[in-house]
Length: 139
Image (cartoon, rainbow, N blue to C red; front, side):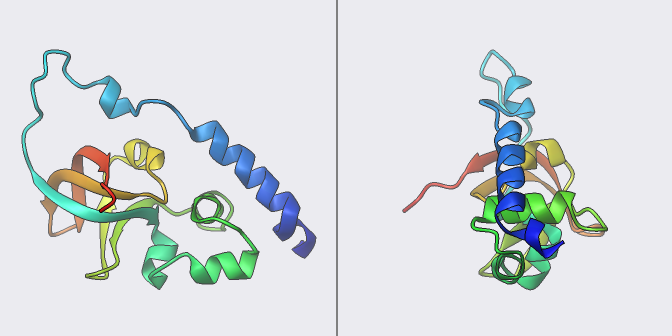
């Protein structure tokens, strides 16, 4: 089993990640054509990652244990190959806050990226009801 964790698993995960990449997200395709904006909500910043690594504060421990080379591959491993499959969450490293995301399809497109999520926050469930996700600008 440990042999598979190395190069073979990395190659399998790389192919799986590449198969998930699309040009536009479902929410972008469903956006109104006339330029109308969705109802405004709050904006949350952080990284889209799997819930297991978010609980640890980073991908570092999982990447070292599995010899995975990138956060993208770590997300794929944690979401697809663990006994209990995970979910995408928004993790704010500065505040150590983890937000559940109701739109997993939209989140998948931005896995392992720093983003700004717009939506309404349900404090009882710690879930953001996503209306938009955009890559965070690098400054």
